[in-house]
Image 1 (tube, one colour):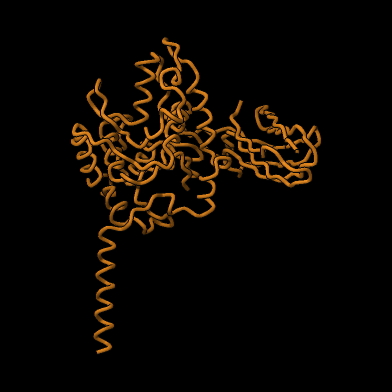
Image 2 (cartoon, rainbow over the protein chains, first blue to last red):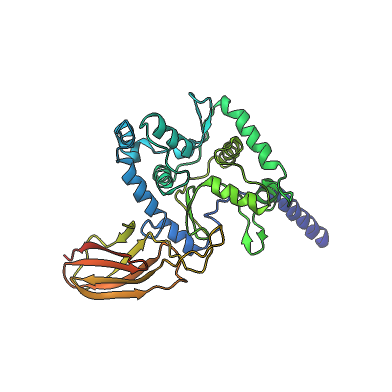
Length: 256
Length: 106
């Protein structure tokens, strides 16, 4: 009688374990960090990404281009106007009839309204503005827009996420869905939720964007990375944001 | 001018020990790395950081190639009177930068 009870308990536990592996609770990279790194990210006087945020704040008020206008002259103070913006990108652009990431949106704004030379992609100034805008959404849940025109792009991103690539013949999903929480060598495998971009990565010793992180992963599986601003990169970013919907933004983050 | 993050408490009580935190945007290039073409990248590091309180040295540190980019220092000083704090970084290729902040003791 007693052994039968133990057995059924063991079965219940096994069933629970299976259910858990089927849909594990979502964790961000922040949850997997050491307390020391979490403290470094939380404290603005210790988070090195704030160096870029300060640069972005300066650029926000600086007139640029043939129009001689600053971001602030149209948008006003960023803490009010940019709140929640990073949580809802990539979003559909009417003029180009395609989704744009937040970084592309800023570049478009610069070109269309300031009539300024494009900033070097992923340079200090572009990352600074991106970090400054993204920071205004700190703590807000990721909320991809409910827009039917985005659907084909999100679906394409989902297919790319599940598609095997590179000499190692791995898909994103193999690590970040099926093996998240395990280790690759000594490194914990995260679920890959883009909550903190652009972020300061200790390994890079600098601030980097989500496309840079994706290129990093792709060279890791020995695939050819997407060219800059490729449709695939936008679709994948859209899928990642959809997948992370509801998780809080913690940009600009610190990661190991 | 390199960007800096300097944290000084807004005000301190007389005799209180306060923590100062500083970060500077500097690549701390070690001199041991090569670029994509295989050429060695010349060393470009900060050699010394110092903090002065009304001209009197209260903290200093030497830096070496093993120090990571964007070096961060946190240190403590005893606040005895309102003073001007100056933070100086010196390094390779004639790098020198000084930032000043007021320490208010009330």
